Length: 465
Figure 1 (cartoon, helix red, strand yellow):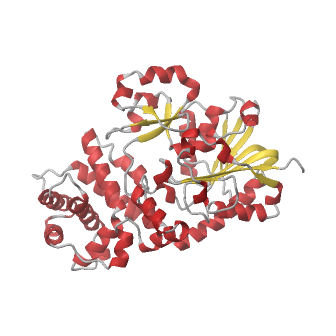
Figure 2: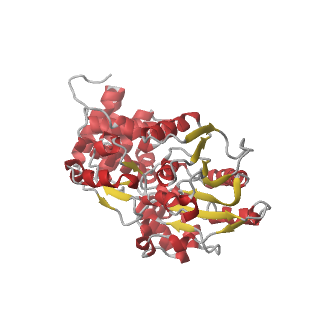
Figure 3: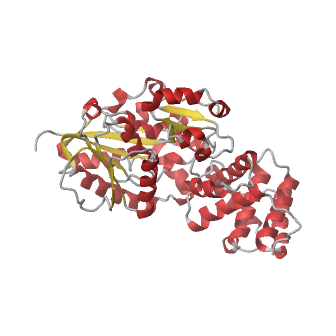
């Protein structure tokens, strides 16, 4: 049991708890971190350090685990989950943290495992970390090419296949850099209130400033603070959302913005950012429908929308890949489909550990089914949006090519969104990287465009019945 006379470091304990949640319970790092870093024992500086440990360890896990497999006298995968988590955090501190001395990393790891697993576990942690300090285990060069970039060998191979060696390295290196700021979407309907908030001490402490694109995007420096404790957030002035994800709500046809009784459905709406953006931009008389396959995640959407006082929303739990229970058609159908999430590696580093060729192939089947079902809901002359947060061309332009060649797809035309991109984005955007001949869809890359990797396509249905 824990030594009550020895105080454990709460930042390391929180980081270890998040790591265990992510790696053994399938949690998302951002959601688990939000839960564990809300501990009142943690000051802002502690939260920032814990975040660095969490995201740094997960980003470097392929290499960290390779070292630990060499160092551990017992099969590493058979060690207790707490032991594995403490060792992984310890290795990151020894090898990748500029702020933690080696002896401190060892001592604090020993304290942590004593607190979590008892005295008997301490000697093993101590021995492994001190062995690592004395000599770094050799890893074959072919594997090290991937591990040094924070990737599994399989994922590095996929990146190289999709983008070539140089761009694959640039993508991977960018994903090792945790974002230093949080991007938020301002509710531009409340311009005077936003202007007043920007003059407050809170906004100045957050170093709030407009992002390069789009218009509603601002960057804030949380510096260990929690977003939901901010007065501006509680007042509904802004919502967490990346610049990339804002594009689907920013690039709307004028006809939708001008129509009062516009009908909109978001088939995969959790966590609610995109339909929330649409609610801000469209008429208050718009009919909005939010759907999701998960009861609990749809409830999060409902809570979010109600917190922003959006009352013109209906909620349906459904599987969008199956026949849909709507008799009416819609002016805008949004398919933000489940995807591999490879555009989010910097903010959700655990994704690199969960994606494989097989998992992508399963997702492609689901994406194609959702796209086919969604197309049946689009009114003549109306729009279908297809978006993902991945950089895999097969899940993006590949799906659109296949859909347009299908029977239902022949009723749709691809609109050229590249002509509508913000001017600041066009300074970095490179259509040659698309590697497709569609000529209108948009693929963003984090290292090039300064936001999450993202894909957006807008299709319009013919007026012919």
